Length: 113
Image (cartoon, rainbow, N blue to C red; front, side):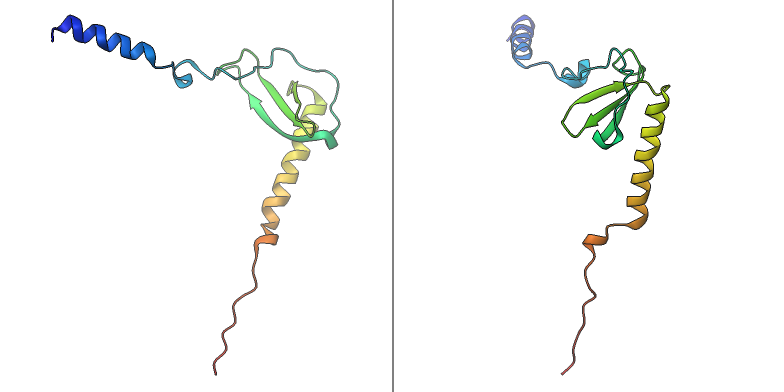
């Protein structure tokens, strides 16, 4: 085979493979583009992640996940956001300090006849 034929076949084969998201960033990633100013009640918050403007998105944000599976974008500069983050961190600290109590098993006893 000639070099032109090999190049042509390689080009066709490579075009059949889909582009990988890792090469171009996450394709299904929804960025926050603005903040909510309405405080979210803490009892509705299930978790959060941080969005950085140094990665894919344009603004820094805290993305709260609610119990209704909604995402709420908020600014870390807002007092209610800082208070919610402090409460979430204290809950995590309490959980890790107490340890997994429900996973403990009683010690085995051996009986000698």
